[in-house]
Image 1 (cartoon, rainbow, N blue to C red):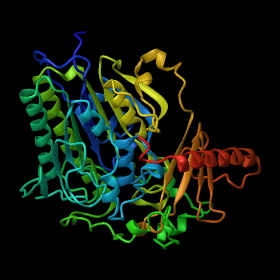
Image 2: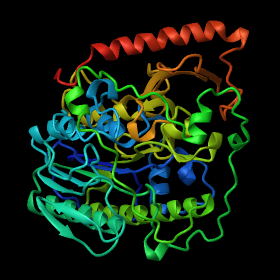
Image 3: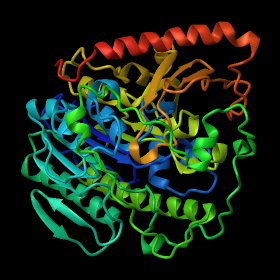
Amino acid sequence: MISRNLLIVLLVIPVGGFRAAAQSPLPANRPNIVFIIADDLRYDGLACNGNAHIHTPHIERLAAEGINFKHAYVTTPICSPSRASFLTGLYASTHRIYNIDTNGIGILGDRLITYPQFLRSAGYRTGFIGKWHIGFDDTRRPGFDEWISFKGQGQYRDPIVNENGTRLQLSGYMTDYLNRKAVDFVDGSVEKNPDKPFLLYLSHKAVHVPYLPASRHENNYADFRYEPPASAADDLSDQPTADARITGTPLPFTHPKKAKFEAIENLDRLPEPQEPRWGRGKDPESNIRDQMSSLQSIDDGVGQLLATLEKHGILDQTLLVFTSDNGFLQGEHGVFNQKRVAFEESIRIPLLMRYPALIKAGSVSDRFVLNVDLAPTFLDIAGIAVPPVIQGKSLRPLFDGPRANSVEWRKSFFAEYFMEKSSRSFPSWQMIRDGDWKYIHYPNLQEADELYDLAADPHEMHNRIEDSDSAPTVKKLKRRIDSEIGKLSKARSNDY
């Protein structure tokens, strides 16, 4: 293969199918990067991960021609902390973007040291398009030459956007607008700066509630029928936090590191109200139909973007990545339209990558990989030294087919969640997943911990915390959580 600048496209959505054109010259060994991320798309929202209803051919091509990480997870299952972890390679305990209901996170968000900043310093042209949501405002963040965003969650229909400092009232559909701007950015980068690598970070609002699809997709899944998941039959008797989740009962609120962040906490306010459903059904069946329909517009844009990459002859020099900021519950354990819990449906995400120079088509990995692993992966492939403070690991060793099986890799991982003032029925928790065992600790609640054996109980319906034969496992995993908390408490997000 001709040595070219790699183009890393982090796609939350897959690839389209087009024939390659003549290659454009790119500086040797300096990859371009395009990152695309969907919102609230759970692991099994894709056909390649078991969804028998969804039709997203460009995403499926990405899985067929790349690698599917079957056990990818976020370290905090809520928008702002998860997005900050993607950008920094750090846990929420370190970057300190704990939740979504503090205006002060906008102040902290401006102070984050992110992989786009490293890439820009190394000579990349950088662009951000879409949902930022680390803070409510839409102003340009450090590290980006081009900036297109919107306030908070934004609107599906006729949105107001900030294009490089100018606020515009648009007519039309948000996802289509973001897709067009992504294509424009790639065209402009290649045509105006052919010798300069670029980073495009494309962050979709879809498929977040209220799930408003484009008019052309509104009736795509009219025949879909909702079937309650297996854990909907869970009697919840052995989950002490279940009653608060189901009834919405407020629990005592404890802000993390309250003494240190009192000034920022004084800026607290509830998140912005949601855009209405515009008369569309609110039942589970209608919600899931519209969620799948919303995903199809993202898939349309992936096809457009990949056509553009092929037009410029750089598709096969492109690392394409599709992911999401967290999972989503659709009736599991009595919860619908929520995340914020440590169950698999909440913390597990899709993660697909296509880059034929390093990745064999049709590859599958069962290793535990995390959202904090993406930042070091991009820096590694771009030839930039990964700062030792980064808590994730480059995924590059897992790309290499058969040899990846012999790579030493994590066999367990830690995740965390911090209660939000706007969601006080969901308590703070700390979780360790060790092989098939999952231990969930609630630091502010007494006798509420949970232990699951996912090999025997994949739907997490039997809490084994009180089983006598589980005592050694509980003791071991408690020590693991204490160790992880200890390491994170020593870390600081300004240690670069």
